[in-house]
Image (tube, rainbow, N blue to C red):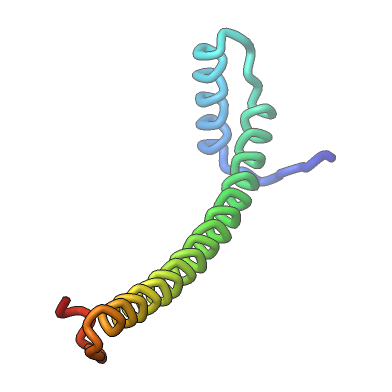
Length: 102
């Protein structure tokens, strides 16, 4: 698909040409101003897509962290109830909520 851009300030065009020449020198091949502008457009689109993916990843990590916190709490409650049960079986005394003191 073609895009036509008009009324661009000459200073910007010269800067684009300078950067294209610099890339030509670094790459060892001719890098046109058209290629440079296409690269800018592609990079902009990819950057937005990358940001969207990063946001989704961060959301998934947050959900996973919350799930792990709930699992940790449930596991600790299970450990406390088993400790309480074992203590009751061994001593005949119910330690109640004093599991943490053992």
